[in-house]
Image (cartoon, rainbow, N blue to C red; front, side, top):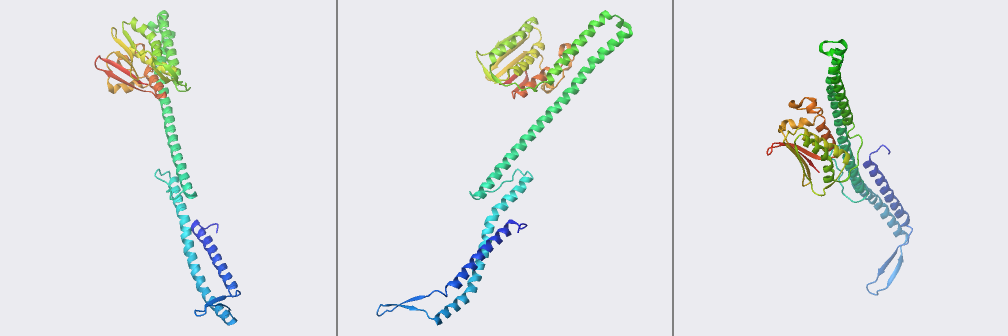
Length: 372
């Protein structure tokens, strides 16, 4: 019985129980009926007198024979009814369970369309509903894990690409510094003049030190989560723009601000400040003399504009790659190290803040918009 499936098991249990009840009932009838005295009430239509007549031995034999002849037919009919009722009962019990079993087999294959049909509100219906809820939570967890896996894979891929780009960027100045020092040691040609080339070597070392520092700082991005808090953007932007206004004034660049008296947002102050500082630094660095830089709030957007030669839209996406510099600014002294916008993209993405960077036609320049 332990190896039987549910349907034959329920059918056999039900059939045996019903047969047992039928047999016991027929045995009771067979044993008790002959021993009871049967009183027949006969009504005399003329005198209306009721007489009690006790059935004699001859009539008792007739009753016994009638019972004995009727018992087999009654037993057969009851057995047939028991089989039919057992089949109907077993099918009614097993059908929803088989449906749940079939649905769970589909769920084992992670079929997203798998679903247990709920036909009732009893315990089996509750079981089907619980299975559906469990499978829905499982799919949601799997989807979340897949997203997390893809995110981690993307982060790892980005780190590998960053390290490759960093090693390539460091390789060129290190090679140049090594060649200069080697020529100075060997006293080759003009390199015999130590007084002229030692300061140049020192500048290379300082540039390398600065680049290494920025690479290390960039690699630490997103390693520590800064809790967001409510901050007045107007006040924060005014403080962030002050040093760049001084730099702009020294290069004859007009730097204008237009912020409302109070404009609050919930965000990590440190990360947001670093991202905005890089944008302001780029805006001032790439604005020509007599040009302008304009920072203002437009509805819920922080906008920073600067007058310059517009960058083609096909090239804008590459500006956010680490160590990428446009052709006209490949010189590290004027074009930076190519990490500024990469840091901006990394920080704003970590804060789930969207942004746009697009050229302007009138006046000619670039516009960076942060959607708060």
